[in-house]
Amino acid sequence: MSGWNKLLPGLEINTEECIHSLEFATSQEAWEKLNEAFLRYDHVLFKHGAIANSGVAVVYNVFVKIRKAWVDPDFNYGRMFNYTETKWTSLLNNYIDFNKLDLLRSKIRVLGNKYTQNYNISYTFNNKHDNGKQCLLAATFSKRFQEDIPVITMVLRASEITKRLIFDFLLIQRMAEYVYGPDQSVQINIFATQMYGNCETLLMYDSYKPFKKVIKGVEKNAWIQQLTDVLYKFRNNPPEKFQSFKVFFRSYKVLRPDLFEYKPLLARDLLLEYDDIEYPEDCISYSQRKAYRRKLNKNKK
Image 1 (cartoon, rainbow, N blue to C red):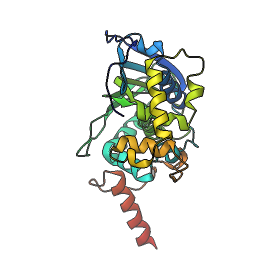
Image 2 (image 1 turned 60 degrees about the vertical axis):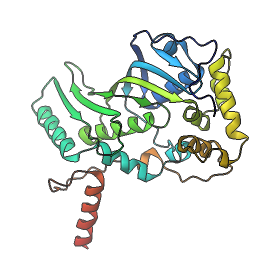
Image 3 (image 1 turned 135 degrees about the vertical axis):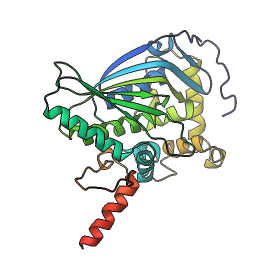
C-alpha cells in the first residue's frame, strides 16, 4: 500500500466551504448510497468541500436526512466487517449511560402524556474508552409542531462511512426503540463535520455489492484506478503481506472469504434489551446491567 495519501493526477481538489445536504428513505439506503458515491467519486459530494488522494477521501459538512430509522435486520456485520458481539458491547459501553437514557425516556413519556406538541431534549454521548475519539457527540430527541413522527438529530465529529456508519445507524435506531418503543417510526437527521473512507476500508463494500457493479458506467479516473489496484492486491497476495497493519488486514479477511471464516452477526440480534428492572444508580453501562440481570435470574432460580 505504498504511496498512501499521495496526490492523484487529474482529481479536483476543492475544499471550499460547502454544506452537502442529502436525503434518503432509510438508514440502510443512506449507507449504501454514501458508500457508492465515495467509490464512484461522485461530483454530488466531491465537486466542493471535499478531497481525495491515493489513500483517503474526505467530505466536509455533511447533512443527511433519513426519513425512517431502519437497518435491514438480516444485515450481517460478521460477514461484512468480521465483527463479533464484543464489538457491539464495546460500542454500547463506550457511548451509552443507561441512567441518562432512562431519564430522557421518562421525560419524553411525561411530555407525551401531557400532549406536548413540541420538545427538544438532548442526550450527550459518553466516551469512556481510553483511546476513544468521541465520534458521536450528541443526539437531540425532538417532537415538532403538527408532526407525528419524532426526529432524532445526531451530531458527529467524524464518521468513517463503511464499517462504522452502519453501526452508528443501528445504535441510534436501537436508542429510538428504547425511548419510543419498537413500533414508532422515527426520522433521523445527521450532521457530520466530516465523512471519510480510506481505500482499504471502502473496498469492504465489495462484499455487499461488487465493486465492478458499483462503478459500471462511470468514466475511469485516478481515484477509481487506485481502488482497482488496491482490490487487485488484496485478491492476489498472501495474508503475510497485510498482517502488519490492522486496518488493511481486516479488509483483507473480509475480501478473502476463501481463506478466512466468519461468524454471522445479524442486526436483528444486536439490541439494547429494554426491561422494567429497577437498577442501582451505579449500574450504568450495558455490561453492568447485563451482569445485574444474570445475578437476578440466578437468585430467582
